[in-house]
Length: 341
Ligand code: PHE
Image (cartoon, rainbow, N blue to C red; front, side, top):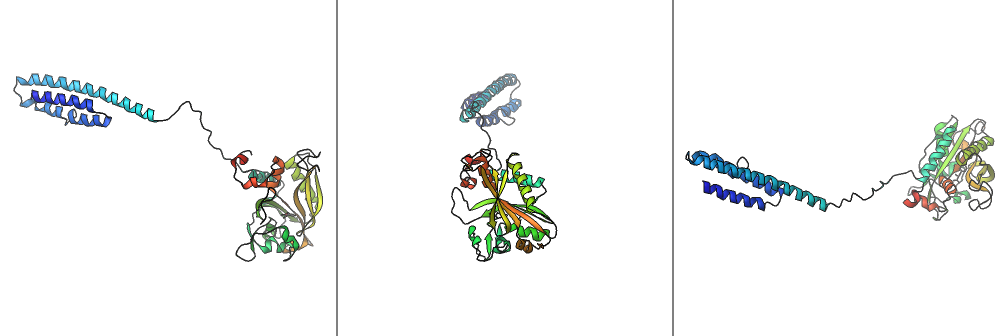
């Protein structure tokens, strides 16, 4: 049995050196030293020996067991270190590398402008009223006093759908009648924001889709002075308290009289610059008193009610405010542009 022990000892020593990984080593441990390992089993056979042989064998096997146990532990430590080093070498972690800025989202410049507009009119008591992007010819044109072959329809080239008379709204004025039908006979003070669509050549100055914010006030004794006062106050709040406004006569089928409002140029303070083309004024919106025909189409008796309406383009306002010279930037999804705001 001593021979057997010597053989096992030599074999175990060899096996320990051959173990190249922690897994090999666990297998080795199970094979020799664990509860059912070869060495342990041999220990249990001590009883079969003669009384004289027992102490010699017992001492010998204990020495061998201890030795193997120590060798096992240091081998385990060695392998653990080697494996850790391999993991670190494979990992390209460079602790001196500066951190990367996480990308931060922001609101689109048009959204920011829209919210400024909502805020100002909200403070003046105007509610936001939403009307559909897909409209009928009746709401977009007919009820706004554009008769079927009225030349003013050509001011706005429409996108048509496969359904006759269903179009994409060309202006937010389409929502005026919807708001009147909903509010009648209450007085109205709403703004109607939304995307508008026109079948046009895309250039630096015109896009096929853009936002508008419409305004509509209907009630008793509303006059042109209320229109001027509201819009002048709006211009001061949006562009600065020093801003002046002027109203030029214009034409829209759904307002009478109609006007366009200019704001004194906030870039040169009215002295004259490239943006205002040396005039000192910037045109920012169309407006007018709601046409009696439109009031009637909305259900309001024009003998008893009057109202004013206006419409502006937030992209145009942002272009003026930030000196953006190409409207295509707004929907071009170029982060270099969007991140500036
Ligand atoms: N709908 C007009 C346009 O798109 C603007 C407007 C709105 C004019 C309301 C007067 C009153 O140009």
